Image (cartoon, rainbow, N blue to C red; front, side):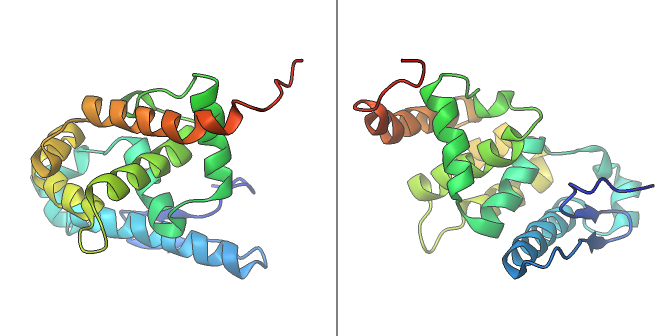
Amino acid sequence: ELIDPSTGGFTEVLRNRVVLPFSGSYEDLRHVVVHGLTHAYMFDMLYGGILESMLGREYMFQPPLWFAEGLAEHESQYWSTEGDMIIRDGIINNYLPDIQDIYGGYLVYKGGESFFKFVQEEYGGPDRWIAGEVLHSLRSTKDVDKSYKSVLGKGLEDLSKEWHRNLREDHWPDVKDREIPED
């Protein structure tokens, strides 16, 4: 089928390949390559060999989009000014949902990216890759909440509250002395 021109690339689990365009920007290419390879790594971690997964019915489990896309964005750029802008607007204007309630749209990318950044900074460090531990746990639990509880002792509800609190602490002081656009 034809691919929409806005598609930045995709990873096919059944064909075990990453497909991506080259727009002429080497930075965009680097970002899309790492994003796609992160998906490929995640698919391999979660599903192993395709035949093995089909026989074991492991292929039926799919992590939530915020997890899959957020991890790929986090690994491919760690954090971006675009992501910061979107998350800042969401937390200031009170429309950023809890992480477990992000199901679609652009927030699966930027909300997930922000959540992974928060968890890594809060609980990880230079010698501990939290996302990798959660991904490893996810292979057996097939449940993101259980995996976070296993790795950090906290589930998504508690982590999401901490994430929102951290975002408010970071971003609310930024706007206290600014003019309101409607005014």
